[in-house]
Length: 456
Image (cartoon, one colour):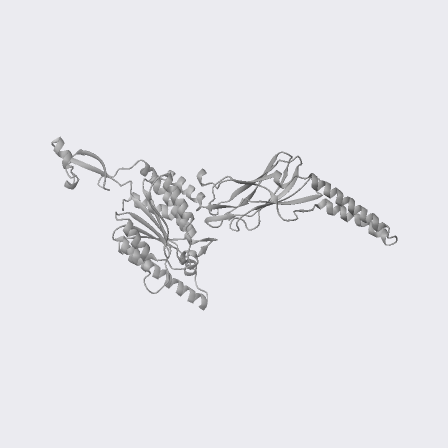
């Protein structure tokens, strides 16, 4: 996880503008006190001179305080990251200030964070001793995956007298990457380790007569299939030797993500694509623990991301980098192009988890036809995003004619979806329609079922 951390950045402060100084709050208080000379000035105008002398004295003290203050070049600002950035994962960004001058300062720092990190401009207030350092943190909660740009950091600071104030700018612009929900993937990994199914996988549970991965040799027994006889070993030993097989442990899992317009729909603040990306990352970690190799294909009108099959930490890192950059497009995805590309890349039978959604049209959606085409060569798990609001309409009893029309239309859509998925199952594919908020857990459970039953 340390490699996922954005780099810390630091810089020296510089004057923020051509006149980077101002009056502090106590200077304004002193000017306000000087207004007491106005009252006697109504009778004797000579008191106006006293007012002028008072203001001149305040200006002189202000100038003296400004002269003794730390210069912008004496201040070094540092933006420090403590944890990787995950979608909707709360975090903290620490701002540290080092004061190389001989005077302590009281400062307020504003960091130009992206609007997807914080709704308001983050600010940190600090008291920094002379020749020392101080730091503070502000909270963030990223609401969009991918690359996000941080801007400059602005600092306004005063001396302990609070008479003069200076404004400075620090160039700390940097681009950071927000990954899918890391907390959810971590929870799924813990669930995986504790589950009975994965314990069986980790112990490499052997099921004789299932699977075609070679495990060992033994003497021939009555009832063994002749195709399992190892003729080379039989010739060497002078007796029949049978090959023993076990469930394949190094199968290929393809994660196919539809990034078309249908996946732009938001559910509880996140798009359906965000839910599919989070689920894909969680499933990838589960598959790694099961010994499978994982590949990725994300597409819209064209291919967005493609990662070949592999395993291990480097492969997980490559998947995380690619998933972070998947973006929903405003157009219908080209499912046929993606299917042809995948069939050309993967000739050996594999498990294809296709995460998509269905358009409500009279004709059969193209994605259904493509999935059926792929089911003849691969085991396809076709995952469709459910529609919570539609389910609520269908399950509620209509109370008037308007609700009756809504109920009828909703029921027709639900029945049509069920019919399309049933046709797909008849052609050999597995299907799963699930609420986006429950997608990750449902997808992992279905994958474990496929592994346990040796469907591939």
